[in-house]
Length: 101
Image (cartoon, rainbow, N blue to C red; front, side, top):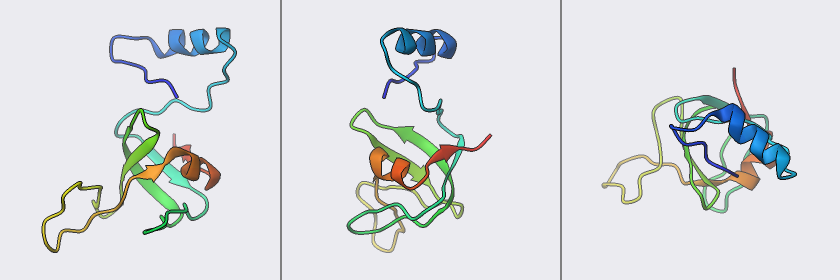
């Protein structure tokens, strides 16, 4: 995983990764729609297959998503506040994670 910063060209980053022997899987950016084709495994709260908004992919490979009803990860939720956990990038990829165009 390699972030593309706002001052960088996605095309140049892709070329650099290819030159280093890596094959880019997809280009993700905050706010884009993503989907999974199968349930994403998680010990506490599996994520149903569906469409989500991508908030961020952290450098530790955890992904912050928002559901269609606006529920997202909250580190310290208030009593009664709905939240979903962070999901591992590997688990999402195994569930058919992809960007929607």
